[in-house]
Image 1 (cartoon, rainbow, N blue to C red):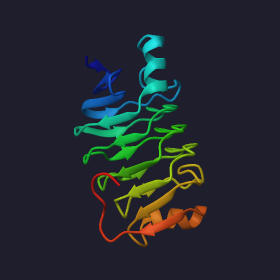
Image 2 (image 1 turned 60 degrees about the horizontal axis):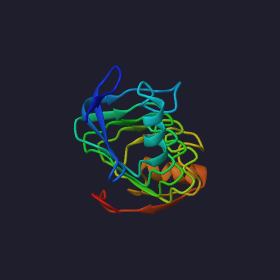
Image 3 (image 1 turned 180 degrees about the vertical axis):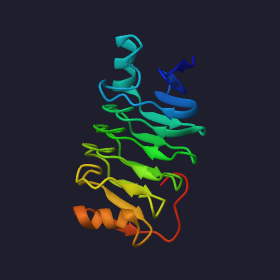
Image 4 (image 1 turned 180 degrees about the horizontal axis):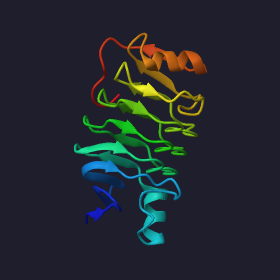
Length: 178
């Protein structure tokens, strides 16, 4: 079942059999800065099920931005697939996703906002494929546990150096699973 997100052309569906949340449609996943997640207009039991149990989030092509706090506190989230058309990741978009271990941020992403991965303490590998991606200048945008992968002398390299994270240079942007 597809469910429209409030004030958006994005829709979501949740497959309970494999605990996968899929976002489809077009445009932005809206900001949800004053609520725990993008699903609060739905019944509380459903929201708790998604937030506590979703293991995978698939954001399909057509989605161009992930709004503020959209997936904040998805504590069981282990895998995120982001589309090649994504342009921005909002403030605290994946904050407190405490089971997330790695993510590939596509080359299309131009900006990662403040605290996008704040308190994602299990996050060990972040690939930033766009060498010019603006990463918000704050020590909490990426967790200290993360190793950043990107093009040498890129914004990811500079962020890692400034905030004391390990950085591994890659020759070309990595595509697909890491």
